[in-house]
Length: 139
Ligand code: 5GP
Image 1 (cartoon, helix red, strand yellow):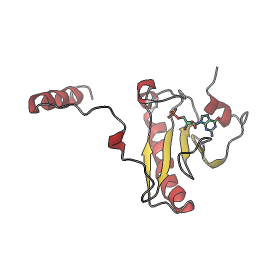
Image 2: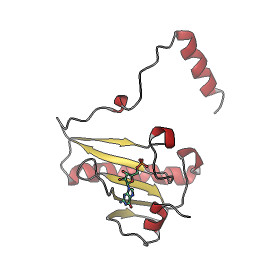
Image 3: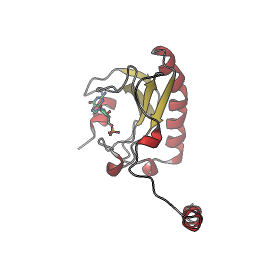
Image 4: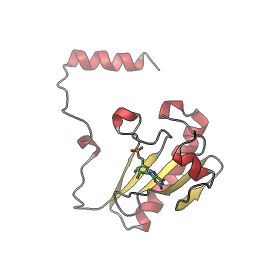
């Protein structure tokens, strides 16, 4: 069963497509958080960012890079929040990688990306050192 976004790629479900190339597609979100809210996806179906092959990830970033100024300019936004909900626990509902470009306006009442997590942990220097080493050791 393909995702709803694969059905958009296939043309089986309509969408307001704003950009397309060989590996990526961008279209307006059906339930926009702001005018111009755009989703950028790899055409192939990958559930999470870490599933995306490096060459496709580079294409995906290139499309985001092109789209962000175009979207901001089109709706006269002051800024944008660009983010991925990467996994169900982070709020991902469609299991097909997608970057959100949400235009932002001065005084729009929204928050920064720091507002998305729960209570901030109080980590000691030792704990921070250990976490940094654990991440570094996995790359
Ligand atoms: P997520 O929570 O997975 O990061 O976000 C999924 C996004 O996809 C939501 O913002 C939702 O409004 C959007 N969406 C879900 N179904 C459709 C659809 O059929 N067409 C379009 N254009 N957007 C969709």
